[in-house]
Length: 355
Image (cartoon, rainbow, N blue to C red; front, side, top):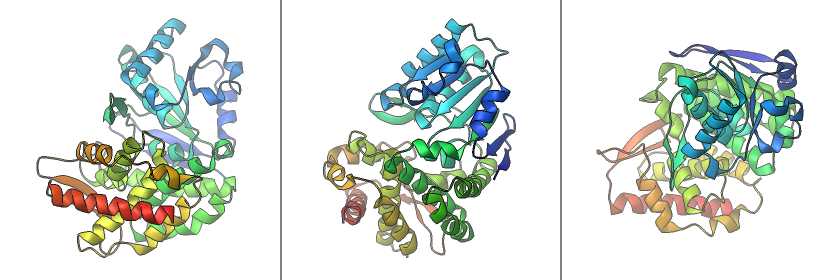
């Protein structure tokens, strides 16, 4: 099964190919291109030889320094403006590759091959990079879309249970944000995809990326509608910081969705009990999550939540389930009362996840 999407962007349209086996087919068609890759795939890509740049996919490399090291390696290879780079990896590799290729010689073309389900369902389209600065997650970044994207579900065979759950949490979130019909379709597709059927995964990925395509085309630079995709993320980024990143981003998003639903109820909205139940079902597949949540640093969580870049001078901006489905942005007054609601929502979510 194969699917094609075309993403429309002011910086150039780019195609997305979704098919099992698509990565190997691409390598055969494009020999000799330089590759930036997650170190996990270094042995599998040994044939690339001295055109391979290896990146350890850790948060400490998702920085200006990490981008600078890639830029220096490209220069050492003699890469010029006419060359084309392929990036192979998950979100960390994508972020530093976006940054490096956008800055190197004021911008060179690149192809992205996401290897995590999180990357396949969410970050691979949209063209954004986000890097960490000091203790602040995703504080800096830019837009530099790839010229094309190759999504190969065969990579899911390399993923841990937590990575698979994290990708499904993002798929759940995007589909819910798009509306009730999109979420219902996601629910139809998700079970065989979770069972490891790569053709079913391709169908699910095509659906979810189609949902995200609408957001990034109607609001390319993240000013209005696309902000809905921050659903669960304000909680998630703060939770990651509060556990020193011992909770992965995807799992944190799932917990953040549950917490945002509790916050919606506290704001006198009906919430989305079906969404919450499904998120908890997904999160039950993450091994040893409860002991990691028991180590949450409350002060670090509050600090990171308040410093989230989506907040404004008018208050704290949060995305919550809307009445009737999908999501809405609420602006809550900054202050002790709101933070008490936020802490309580996270506490209820962690209690449900921990069982």
